[in-house]
Length: 239
Ligand code: URA
Image (cartoon, rainbow, N blue to C red):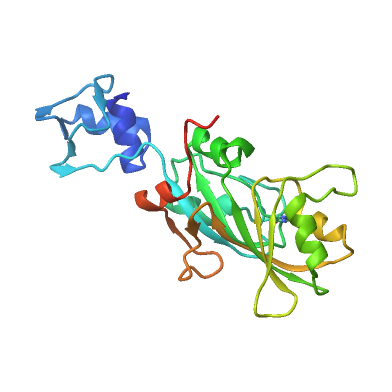
């Protein structure tokens, strides 16, 4: 990948292109061993770029794990409510972050934020089979019949036939684990609605093979490590 040096500096330092150009014209930038003053010089993501003698760490994209609290909406901006992007953007002022998949306003747990459009598309694409796992608190007990309906594919009230989903009881009565491989609007609430069961709490714990970090309190976030990104389970050749 080739990238203009002024963009590289602006991405790596979280500053504007204009400020990156000022650093360049002041002679503060060295790329691959030479002082460079022009922003249109091309570098690659493996170039070694120093600003005032300090090596920059370049990342084309960022991937963030957020523990979404209740009351926050899964959007980039909203007139009335705090969004998941509002919670993180102070640390990433130059990044166009967005949530890769949604949780309802009342739901909590793992939301992945990124500026990598292709990655976001892929983790939502049904053909990529990236599972999402939830802990769900219900207002009634489940039974074997409901478990096997989830397994064979629930038909929603509007006639939509869903793919097979896993439903497992936990040690706590009325608390279940659900694993989905597709994302239909209000899917879990609508699936239990078919059996006249209400959802009181819904918390996403996993995306693919990655678990939400238990150290993150509601509203807290951290970057997803490269080895965790691998564990999301995307096989880019699937589609
Ligand atoms: N299913 C729902 O009904 N709500 C969510 O937030 C996620 C899955």
